[in-house]
Length: 143
Image 1 (cartoon, rainbow, N blue to C red):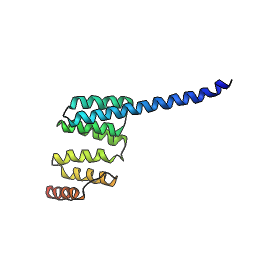
Image 2: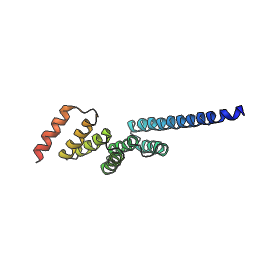
Image 3: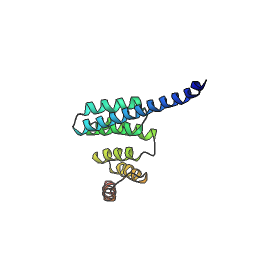
Image 4: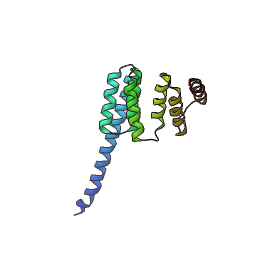
């Protein structure tokens, strides 16, 4: 009877270990994805982020990482879709707004770039104020 009292604790411990292992796996895939991306191995980076998403689906940070890889590959349309998906999942995720704004800026769409970069800053994402001023000037010049 005494052994049965420990069964719920043992099961709880096992669940915690399983969760910890999954978190470590996710972080391992993230680390791999970043390493591959920094080395220009974009296909492997996307595979690593996809593996992480299998363990932690609907994570806006992981989706944003994929978008960054697509952006690095010059696949702006795919990158925009990833950033928009991340924003839809978490409208308060500043990094996704920042990255989307960077694409708009590279496409010389300065007003939407400015809006996204300001939104990212308002959400606490670190943005250089001089960059915002530059975007303001460029957006005003396009009007």
